[in-house]
Structure formats: structure tokens, C-alpha cells
Image (cartoon, rainbow, N blue to C red; front, side, top):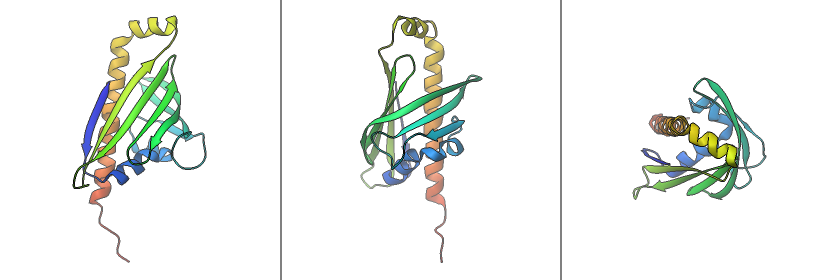
Length: 155
């Protein structure tokens, strides 16, 4: 599944919000907590544990960045009975004032029990993925565009 939104902010600002894992819970309505498990800057090897409440149930996954090209794209993976792979691509507008963010989510693998559960809950899982990604992109736009409108501090 792929989700896309254009945000009225420069690519470096949008990237900075997405790379700031420590503030996910305060910025993204769908995230209850996000705990960084690795040290250093954001890039390949960055790991974090993220908890969301999904239809009244708490769900926690551990994510790990497996590919990263600063300001362009990153890929992170989690194990949820199968490999859940999410790619986030940032495309600046020609004038640099806007950024298109495309999120692609897919799963690979999983044993027979996972595939049976996925088949039985496909409609629910699909709705959950759509709701979470749509809300996250709306929150990202609100955060980035709000920061764009803040007056500069004079000193």
C-alpha cells in the first residue's frame, strides 16, 4: 500500500521531523510511545520501539532502519509475524518550498499461521494500515507547516 502527501515545507524540515524519533509520541497522535534503542544520528542501524493503540489494543513493534539516503529516502523494517517493510521517500518541489512524502508499506514472508491470520483479518489489517499512515501524514503536515508559520525570533 502506498500513501502520499505534499507538505508546505522544505525537505530538510520534513526529514528532521521524521528523523526525530524521541519526539514521535508528542508529535504523532497515533503513537503512544517511541523509545530509541540505538545511539547516534538517524541512519542505517537506527532502532526504536514504537507503541500504538490500534482499535483499543496496544501494539508494540521494534523498527530498524535498513537503508537511508539523507533527505531522500529511508527504509525501516519490523517483524510482525512477517517482515513489515516501510519505505519513506521525500521529493522536494522545484522551488524547494514543498515536499512530497510517499510512504510504501508491504509485508514479506511469514509462516502458515501468519498467512492464515492475515487472510482472516485482511479487512481489519488493511483499514489499520490505511488509518495509521493517513493520520501520520496529516500530523507530519500539521507539524511541518506549523513550524513554517512561526515567526522568527529576533534577538
